Image (cartoon, rainbow, N blue to C red; front, side, top):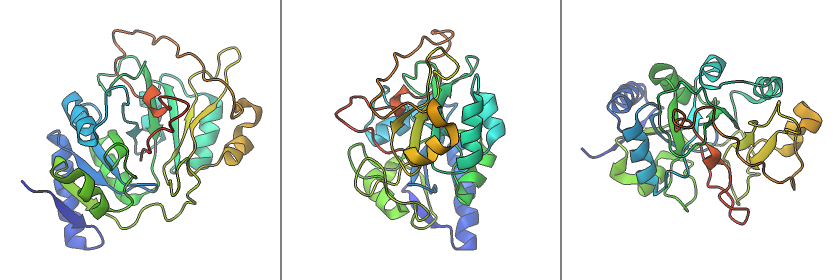
Length: 268
């Protein structure tokens, strides 16, 4: 079946699009939806085959697992093994919004997002359509709606041009990113800022920005102060997952750059 773009500014198309999007997610198919930053390509986070379809649609490897979008803080506490106080202060300031946080994942989670090293990248988007869908489907694996190496889509038609029939439903919520300044790592980049909080609480641990995005270093420093590592701080070696066999099951060392020379791809 050919994909269809649903104009969510029209009530009848909104109702049909959301119904079909819920159905598609439940069947393991892919959906493109607006977020407050860029458009995202979404799959059921707890369906490994659906997550693999997402990676294939983007031309992405398992070494680059997608972040997970969630409807609220209660879901954060259910998915993360521990949420340091500094992270709670950050999400109080910037959620819903353009901040993605990497944390240790609950080791009991039954999912496979790729080569995650026992972590998960979580974000609550500030977009009513995204939040409504998330409230009905639960956590979604979501990456930027584009082919790898191409600019992240800020509109549904732009996403459809790149992803075509690999996506079953496109929800058109208008142009994304209007509430942010494009201060990310690439020209015009409206992707979220990603911070790694996995070493907080360890001796010498710090919060590290692994991708600059719409939330600036200055804004983050104003909340956490000296807990934020400097821009030239070396990345810590990833800690072993609590149970390496059980936790091929979270997401996101892949949210960090694969190399210092190449900025990480935008994610919704």
